[in-house]
Image 1 (cartoon, rainbow, N blue to C red):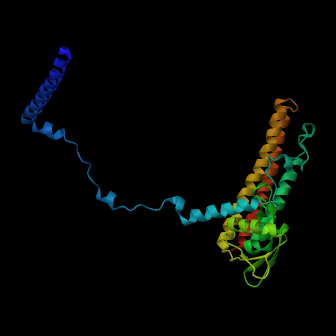
Image 2 (spheres, one colour):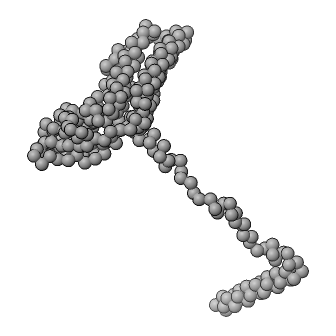
Length: 293
């Protein structure tokens, strides 16, 4: 106990001696060299008038032009993936619609050309609808995807035309005559969620199965942006189908079902035909944009 008490008394004294020695050393150094004391003080960074005068500019991601492009792309993607469109190129159900490639006849591209033809029919129709009124076109309204039972079957979607009759009225008014009362709420939700319409359809006071909505005309520059976005997606789908066929060639080569020279020839032929298809898309895009001017 005596040793512990002595240690407690010794440590404060030692700490006091160290602090006193430190203060004495700093005072001597300051008196002999004032610059040393000044240099030990933290320096404040000089403020730049030019920097402080600048006001924060609007980020590019929030600019109106970019927002317009993003909206056009989103709307184009919805049109490209509506229930009436061709399905994704990796979908097994889609594969069943086309002939299978045959390593014994490597230059037969029927499986690829039928995929391109399906894409051609879908996107030509979408561009035609844009050229003839855009979202006010009854066909565009009728193609709106609707989920009749989102709670129990969220993956099942139907085009609106199968659940209701689309009837243009006077001016910009469109009536939706719903076939089944159970589909009224799903149709209302689909219209509200659509970037094309984004409004609450009004119920008719005289008919529980009738909904009305007002469709404002689209500006030509907005239609042109959507047409450009649609053709961009179309080109991507064409290239995806091409790449899928070329992967089949590579698999056959590994499995020694075809020789390298024949594979290179088939790859070149696929790219040659793809170039013609993409050229046709370019031409159709120019014609569509010219009609929208």
